[in-house]
Amino acid sequence: MQEWLNSLLIQEGLSPNTVQAYRQDLETLNFFMEQSSMHLSDIDEDSLLLFSAFLSKKGDSRRTIARRLSCLRKFFAWLFQEHHIKENPALLLDTPKLPLYLPEVLSLEEIGRLLSAPDPRTKLGQRDIAMLHLLYASGLRVSELVSVKATDIDFQKGIIRVFGKGRKERLIPMHETALSLLTAYLQNTRPLLMPDPKTCDNELFLNRSGKKLTRQGIWKLIKKYCLTAKIQGTVSPHTLRHSFATHLLEGGADLRTVQILLGHSDLMATELYTRICQSIIQEIYSHAHPRCRS
Image (cartoon, rainbow, N blue to C red):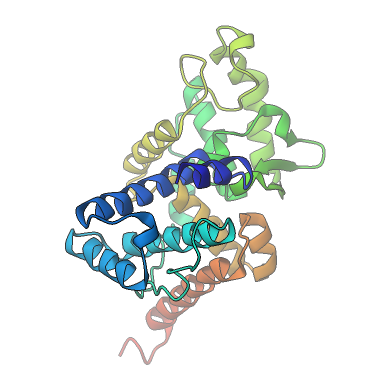
């Protein structure tokens, strides 16, 4: 198990968080094998069906079960490829059908309120205005945002360089408002947050102590500004990513372009946003068409 996890981290370049999730899935399998007095070589198709039932009985959601079984398919495929086992028991392993999940998306009016929520008179407010505009202008994942360096932004070309899942590089164009706010932050605000320039390692967004702003810190800030902006529901950094993609498609962007901007390896992941657009169109139609209001 450890050998496979190491290969994911070193050879495939998966993030530590992803590898840790796989580790937890394998630890769950290991617990099941111990309870059933099984060795890894004893696992067959029936064993994996029992494992799936075990997950359901212990209360795992369908989404969690699907993720764990996906991990096992990859793990056993690797075991077979490396000749640790003679047959792959997960070859025909099915995953439970997941309900269609449409992520939450903010309206343009809500986006405007959120971007205006930080106080521009304070240095932390100036930082947060630049950060929120960057999130919405680029569709970055929060893990990508905290890894951005000041040198990753090309202000002349209006492009930011991002390293996504598997350390895959992509270049994302940004509009002038976001670039202007980032310029002001870097020139005027960020130096005030740096007690010692040598300790910052060129990180873009710093906390009040001059250290790199963390994922948890960004989540808390967005939660705070949603309260200030009186935005209902659960909003996360990923909500801004969903809103970025949906609003681009509504504005006429093609699916392939949005896929590249989001860093999706599979177009099917991006097609989810066309469903969101369709649901918004349906809602607008229902409110606007005179026959729907009668």
